[in-house]
Image (cartoon, rainbow, N blue to C red; front, side):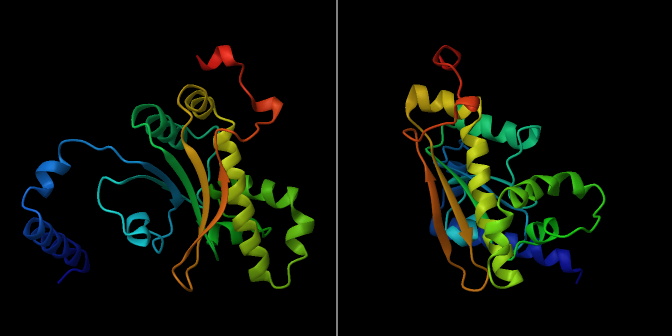
Length: 213
């Protein structure tokens, strides 16, 4: 059997199990989505959002890219943010990195990776800003993992600086931003950072109230 066909067979088994437990599961699923969470995670195949959180279809709106970045010039992630916050009105935005991230590790080298160089530049900037702290860590793995954590925090700040987030905070006092990191060795999520509507925003990135009405 072609390996990809095992996925199709697994899908059929999944459908059968869902309908056995809840006969109208897919009828309800087709009526629309009202997720409470936006998950911005790494494309790494070992960190699927629903799997590691035990969530069901419809609970988490998901965007994934290399190293879970939120770049202000990336129309893909910015469109996801806009839709999740303004249309779906999620209550929580989670940026989830993972220890041992290959993208973060690559950004700490001087190697050339082709078109990915432009993407990894965003992580290199975080590394540059925190070089002394990161390089003071013992092992190379510890350094990579600290940069993973600091990069997650930087992505939260990038969301905080966006107009769509500040407008939602001003008008509806939501969503709360969370920075998590997943451990591949133990499967646990670490809740490291939280930014909520009461958190200060640097003056350079803060929109006037009139622009948020």
